[in-house]
Length: 237
Image (cartoon, rainbow, N blue to C red; front, top):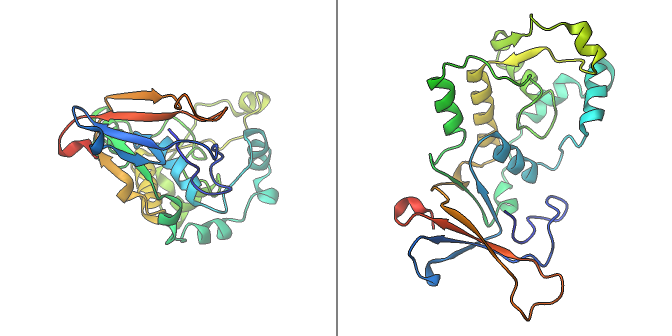
C-alpha cells in the first residue's frame, strides 16, 4: 500500500497521494502513525520490492528480453565477475530511500514463514528455477552467489524434464532448482546488504480500510489507507 512517493525514479506513485496510517485496534486517533509505504508480509515478493526501491542498478529487462538473454548467456548477459562484484555491495544509504516504510509480519522476521513451511513440509528444493529470486540486480545473482560460496551442489537439476520439448515451448533454462537452505541463505544475504532487517514489525494486520479524500479535496486527489493492528506490543504502532 503506497502513500507518498518513495524517491524520484524509484517508485511511480502519485505526488498527491495521502499517507497511510496504522491504528492499533481500540486505540484513539492520537495513536495513529503515518507511513508512506506499508508492506504486509515479509516473504520473497516483499523482499524483491524493497530491494528494487533501494538498488540504483537493477536489471530492467522484461520477461521476454530476459529469456532471450538467458538463451545466449555467453554473449549478452553480464559477466559473472561483474555480478559477483555487485553482490558484495552494501547499501549504506538504504535508509534514505526507505524512510516512512514499514513491513508488517506476524512472525516479525524476513522469510520466517517460508523457513517454517520448508522445515515442516520437508521441502528440499524450490519449485521455481534458479533465476527466479528477489535480487533486482541481475537474473544470474543466485547462481553466481552459489558459485561464490561453493554451494553449486545445492542446485537440483531437472533431470526429468524433456529439454527439447521445453525449448520448443520457449523455455531455454536454467534447468536447476535451488535447494531451500541455499535460497533462504541467499535471501538473508539480501536483507543484510540492503539494510532491510529494521523495517519488519511483528504484527498481524487485521484489516485494511480505504479512506476517501475529503469532500473539499481537489479533483483526482488520492485516497489513503488505514491498517488495523491488534492492540498491544505486537501491534507495531
